[in-house]
Every structure is written in C-alpha cells, then in structure tokens.
Image 1: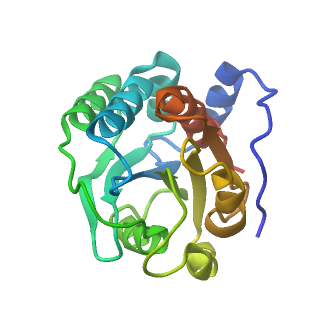
Image 2 (image 1 turned 60 degrees about the vertical axis):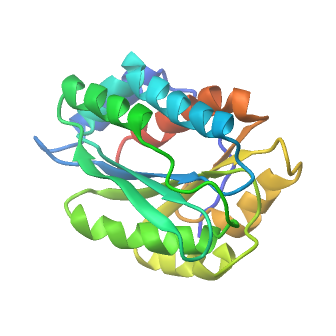
Length: 226
C-alpha cells in the first residue's frame, strides 16, 4: 500500500496533460473518478452549497476541463451520510468533449441535497461507491475522491475496508475539511486513503473548499498513466 502526502507538481500541467493523452489509445478511459460528498448533519445548507458550487466551478476551469477530455474521464457523484444512507446522485458520465464537462458542471450545481441529518459513515460510503465502478470496466484507473468534515462515527470503520479497496484496484484520495476537527487530515491519512499514490488535500474551512477541490482534481485527472 503506497500512501503519500501530495507533493508539489513539478512538471508543467500542460505537459502532464499532453503525456496523459499520448499514453492513451483513441477513445480510451484513463480514469473513472467518483466524487463522493459528505452531506451529514454537521454540514449546513450554506456549506452544502459551497461544496456543489465549488465542485462545479472547478469542473468549469479550462485546465481541468481539458484534462478530463484528454483522458476521456468518467465522472459520477455520490452523496453520503449515515451507515444506511448513500446515493448515486449522478450516474457515470463520460467526458468526451468540453460540452460533456460543461453539462456535468451544470448538473452538479443543480443537484439537490439528498439528506440533511444523520451521522458520518465513511466506510459505508466507500463500500457503496466501490460497487458503482462495475459500470465503467474499461477505465484504466478507479479513484474515489471522498470529502468530509469529520471522522467516521457510525457503521463500518473506513480502516476496515482499505484492503478491500486496494484489492479492487481502487485508489481512495481524501479532501479533509478541517474547520471542525483540527486533526482530520491525519485521520484521513491513517484511516481512509489507500492505493498507489493516494493523498489527502486539506481545506481550512468550507470557504477554502473551492481552492482545495480544484487542486485535488488536477492531481487526480492530470496524472499520466504508468
């Protein structure tokens, strides 16, 4: 299990994207990326809005949109909270053109919140999301991008499913929104992320989420295949 902190990207991003595109056969899917968003009771309506708008804004950034198309990425959106509450809010969509990316951003921005209460069950969210990759078997990499503002307090502990994620060829990366729990980033490092090159990005608070998700998406999408 190779887990790391996110190091600064030293290669120019345009070069990284070009390498990723060159490494792929025509119309091949390099990465299936599941955007897995915490909507538990600790998140206010305003904070939910910051997450959805921040994610949509990031997808609309030209560098990210170009990377998604260059790598023929597949994207989905999962909302999760307690142990029995996970929802595939946006089913897998292929980013074959800039129009596809723009449409994904529009749908993300318009997605209603699935729940407003309940606990935080990260392990169950990972197990639920892992099954959805069956719909995108042709994608070279499988990545769960899980974001949240608290440690797991219900259901299957996330540390208990890390080996299962790795066995399924799934990399789990984390976005820790650390305005409530100061030690959330170390928690994600020690209990949540797994897979080759897995990393955690920290958002200081929800206002910092848009910056953090943009940086995270660039790292996940722009990496060339090995």
